[in-house]
Image 1 (cartoon, rainbow, N blue to C red):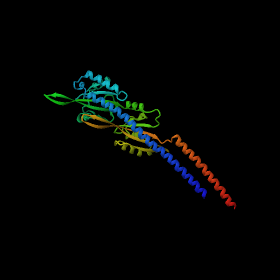
Image 2 (tube, one colour):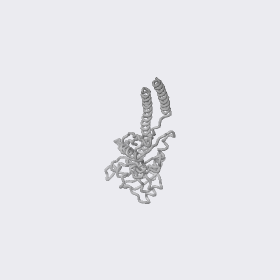
Image 3 (cartoon, helix red, strand yellow):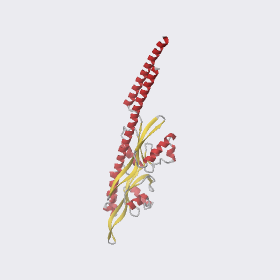
Image 4 (cartoon, rainbow, N blue to C red):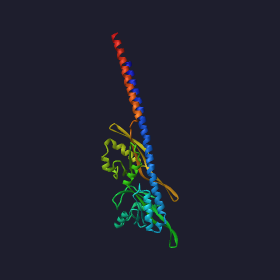
Length: 330
């Protein structure tokens, strides 16, 4: 009886020690995932801030108010060169919604050939009405048929109108970011030693970046993506997605078929200083997933503890057997 009690106590002691070590590994995954999500979010946010700064400089340029198409081409091309690792094109759409200039001459020619007009689109109406920078969700271009995020900055200038100085709307200056260029940019920022996964969603749930490129451009709430998820995975996954789309930070643990991991999420936002006000625009949500994998030293500790525990149990069991034999013989 004493031997059984001692053996049970040893087993419980080993289980407790193993649990502590394993929990330490999970807590480390929580911390690392959140840190990496925060760091990656800041990297993308900083790149977006560079784009917004370019648009603000261009929109205030005299070439816009003077409708200097020749020189605006050079300015748009210079802006594209400065952020070409992230953006696809820069363009100017005039006050009537017509494309006037674009850093990509081929796209401009195609837009003008199809008589493209942006005057009734949100990317035009919102900045015109608010005077603020507009960040779109994923849209499909009427010209190229590809998916983009659009950053739009309204342009105004003080002009004489009927003898009075008035603020005149000159149109919008935009930067387009293709989903392909977002993916390429995020890839360049990942360390070769990174052992997890990274994902990027727009505020409506469209996948902007994924290691599985076949899902880029699809919506996580769509039937195709939902069908790809294991049944046991769906409820916690969509709970996390819905929470992340509220603009909050956090993490969610997952387990499937004996394996576990942590996803941390962080909004990608850009703080904009415009005129007399400062405001924030959310562009995306970034996710970092890390598996719950024991570090080598932690795994070694568990293995050592298991060996000691096994030897101790065997020793106690052997001693108990000898004691029992002596008692029986007496």
